[in-house]
Length: 168
Image 1 (tube, one colour):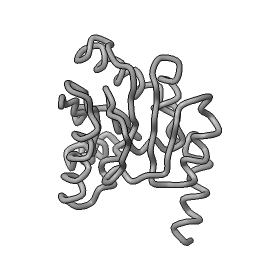
Image 2 (cartoon, helix red, strand yellow):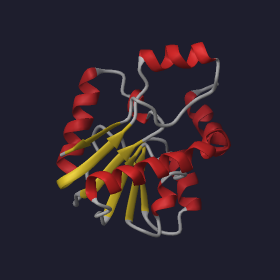
Image 3 (spheres, rainbow, N blue to C red):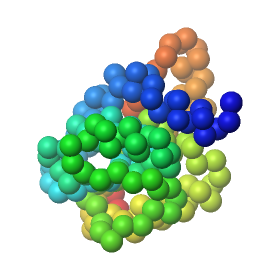
Image 4 (cartoon, rainbow, N blue to C red):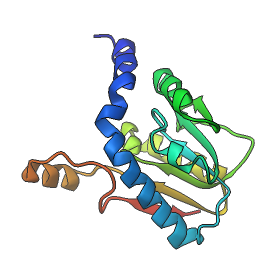
């Protein structure tokens, strides 16, 4: 199957696979907002927002923006969000004429960056788009997490000890 067709089909079923974890991710992000920002944020950006399943939880509280590289994921996100903006953009080189109090990336989206240079470019770009004392929250998979997951023979995802909240 060609990659574009796979992505189009996958976007329609993504929520069925991931939605139960979306609420957990929202709760964990909220915990970090309270812990590191005292709940004091006005706007946020989600990198790799997919179908908007996580960002939708923030809709009533903050000015929300999401980006994803997949046009099909963005199409699905636009269907479920009442307001807020989602754009087809790459996390390595997105550009906005504004900065954000919070930028986050969950569901191990950072792991789609396969080269060290891509990680560095993304992190520099995030730094450029964070307000002073802004917060960047992301999760990643590590070899340890894969080994532990395999040894437990369970299907786990979401935040774990590999969650890395950082300040700008």
